[in-house]
Image (tube, rainbow, N blue to C red; front, side):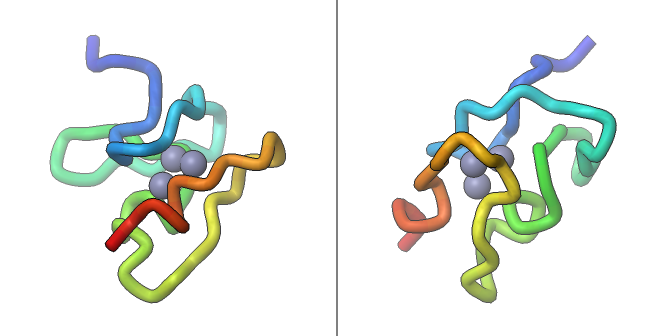
Length: 55
Ligand SMILES: [Zn+2]
Ligand SMILES: [Zn+2]
Ligand SMILES: [Zn+2]
């Protein structure tokens, strides 16, 4: 089983029912799955700032 936390480097979100699988890794949301390439915010409601941490 893969780790059940988001594969986004700066994201600590736990994968939920809306988790996105990409390249064999799990991401908590589409934004993380796209590595925030287009500035999508993290879908987490806990104030996760992984999108801001992305270069
Ligand atoms: Zn996040
Ligand atoms: Zn995430
Ligand atoms: Zn992220």
